[in-house]
Image 1 (cartoon, rainbow, N blue to C red):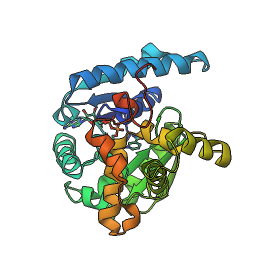
Image 2 (cartoon, rainbow, N blue to C red):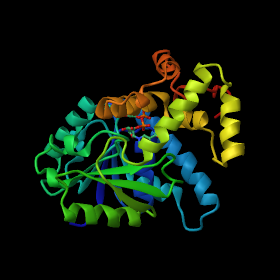
Image 3 (cartoon, helix red, strand yellow):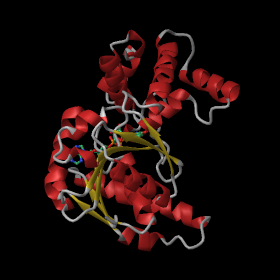
Length: 284
Ligand code: NAD
């Protein structure tokens, strides 16, 4: 089945970016979020991103790309989509519900993908009729700029679904890398312990955030320090991923740093809330 219409659930930083790259590739997109303010923020962010990209990319027409994206409030509005990419908050119960609702709205052959950072695709697929069409499509942040999509096959995923999603990823201008369905996959199994350890360095008084990040950028040539990266990802998302790693592996090396948990409890979620390890209130 040719993919022409894509439904994206969740218009946060990832869902908005996924909608954008799909529209840039010529696909019609329905972007769904329960929060109308978030829908508006996602469209405004897409406009800013496309205007910047268009300055260096001949032929990219922001108006034409944006005209391919419609905002809707719930998965029931996704009827007719050949692909749904779920990118709502990293909570198992929420994702199970949204995937079930999406499956009820689209045809039995439509592919259902999740952008989860850590949750078992096999568990998510089990909540969907015809689970062979469920797959993980783990985009990286910021989606318009990052070349990787980590593809995760659930136990149930069939070859046709896998091939279709690898081909679509390539059509989006990204490189698919397929990995197994283990907690955190490869990306977050490697990345999150580093971010957590960086948070422990601050928690234990070893160094302040700027010093921790300077060691990793200047000393290890990381383009962004782990704490600045945590702020970009969202500290709530980092805690949710670490909780999945901890509960699935039952290994104390994944225990969440109390400082991270405290920041999240205080609403310090990183860039998206204006403050995390750093303050973003003066930056646009
Ligand atoms: P976010 O907090 O920016 O956005 C989540 C969005 O989901 C919000 O707009 C919220 O309103 C929406 N939402 C919540 N309940 C909903 C519902 N019932 N129906 C529709 N929308 C609903 O989070 P994010 O950073 O965009 O992350 C989204 C997903 O992508 C998570 O699974 C996360 O783990 C994953 N992910 C995040 C990153 C990252 O760097 N932030 C990278 C890769 C994958």
